[in-house]
Amino acid sequence: MPLILSVGLFQSDRYFHPEHQHSEHDHNHDHDHECDEHCDHDHHHHPHHSNHLEEDGFTSVSFQSDRPFELRKFQYFLDHQLPQSVFRAKGILWFKESPRRHVFHLSGKRFSLDDEEWKGDRKNQLVLIGQNLDHATLLNQLAACVTDA
Image 1 (cartoon, helix red, strand yellow):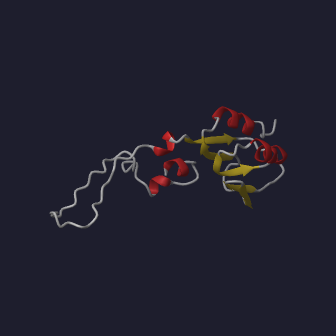
Image 2: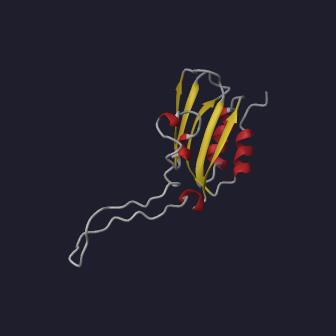
Image 3: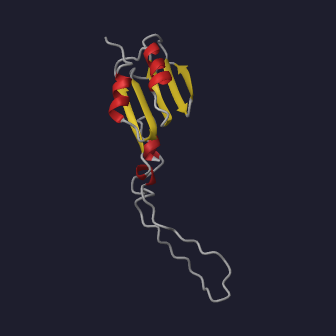
């Protein structure tokens, strides 16, 4: 859950407490009951969990910029450079061609871009979630979408 929510756009600590990290606590639970040779119900076991996301190569890339994107360059990134291994993306985007704040959502090959009034400082904040991502390449490609001045 922190992987998805820790983008600085959601105050997850108001809802989730750091001391309750699902993958880090012991799952040994006792269930008081008597079982004999006539016991015919299923037993509920809690196996130990590992960090499946990391083991399966799932990572996130976070990009921020205090300068706006050029819309044409960002569109090129989406159409020609974004790897198929990026499954989700979310962000607040600033384009030099628009005075509005753009809320970006990507799931698979589909994305939406909703605009609204800016609240606060203008900047780009984008998180990409996927499998076996080349962080350096993605960050360089996104940086190339930012205006020069």
